[in-house]
Amino acid sequence: MGNVSKEMVDAVRLARLQDWERMATRMPKGQHILSVEMLRVAPNQTAIVLTIARDGKVHQFELVADAKGQNARPVITRRGRVECDDPPKALAEGPAPLAGGEDDTVANDVPLNYPPDKEPPDPGVTSLGSSLLETTFDLGEQVAGSSTP
Image (tube, rainbow, N blue to C red):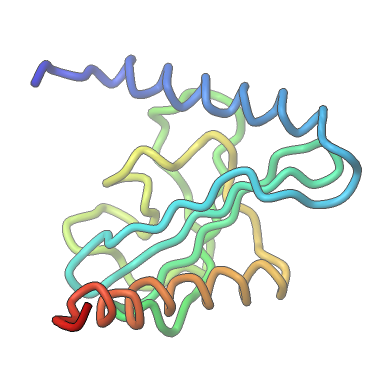
């Protein structure tokens, strides 16, 4: 496996955002899910990042939860469109810091952060994210570990 530089990671982040922005402008008015990324970010913590096209613009929401995907809480970062390597600033809604991380954003460990900023999720996004986390990390792990066919 070769070395991956920070510049290469930043280029992928920016290319992904540009593609989502292009896609968002071509979609009909309303709200459309572009990406759902679920991760175990620590032995006792899970996360979901939802990327949504809403009326032609890209919005991104992040929730973190416990190991079973329960008790999900929003994490909101505001960076401003400067450099991808600026440290994120999480707002008060975020949970306790992740194990090994400097702050409470998933993106310090996984390249899911800026761009775009994480926004305060509306109740529908919070409900969807919470349901997906619980289904995946609680029920899903039980089903995947089942010995019955």
